[in-house]
Amino acid sequence: MRLIGIFRGKGLGITFCILLAALAWFIGNLSQKNTQQYRVKILYKDLPSEKFITPQSTSYLNVELEGIGFSLFKYAFSHHTITLSFNELKKVKKSKYILDNAVISQINKQNYPDVSLSIIEPDTLTIEFQKTKQKKIPVKIQFDIPLVEDYRIDSYQIFPDSVIVAGLENDLDTITGLYLRKKENKTVMRSFAGEIPINNTNKIHYNISKIDYSVQVKRVTEVRTKTKVQLLHAPLSAEVKLFPEKVTILVSGNIEDISQLKSTDITVIADYNKKKNGVMPLSIHKKPSSLKVTLPEENQVEYLVEH
Image (tube, rainbow, N blue to C red; front, side):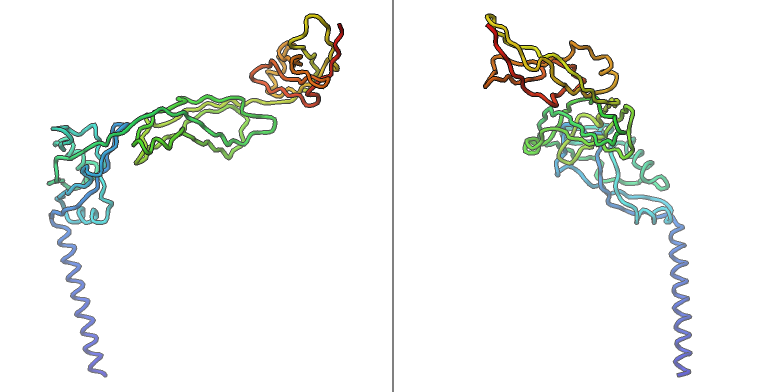
């Protein structure tokens, strides 16, 4: 047993020495200048909004980096993706774009700042575009905004109110509009404005990157008042009396508009041509567009014809 313990102790010592030597070799190697090859994925930006690249387009590059081992070592664990601007690629022939020295230098500076990019393959990219179609669609925004009591959204503007969308025909056939939602948790009592970003997808591209909006919030109130009923299509050979002559209307809207309301701004009519069983239906014939007007009590009147 004592002999086994001696060998076991020596074994641990030998293992430790081997590990220490390996570590020293590893650190020494990392401090030397080396080269390393990586395969990186390409992401293209600034592509024409109405075009889509085909799966056959170049999507990977092989790069060889040269530098101190410590610097190269970290790239072994990084996400190998580089972004190329389509506008900066030089077209040499149909579907062929070259990576010139300026672009290669930019790739080196942005992605591998502490090492040198010695080789990049291929240096000529194949970029092919699919045939797509475009169509104009309306923009709709749903505002989920909690408002202080007695306040409401009076109106809103969207700019632009329509966008051009590009994509494959089968995908475009399913799109009827751009439907957005603006949600706010904070209670609002004032007008506000902002923008909603629009992101392209693999199948759909938009001609703009954002939608601007402006929302007008106003304080509202309700007022009940009486107004005289006007007779429409009255007979020329007789006099028609209505019962009642005045009816109650409920006017809802912002306080400023209601305070400036005139008696002639709202008209309630009874249409003689629609008389039936001794009554005529009532309807709101005229009102300001900013106000809501309803008939909360009477929706018809009786009448008497005097010849």
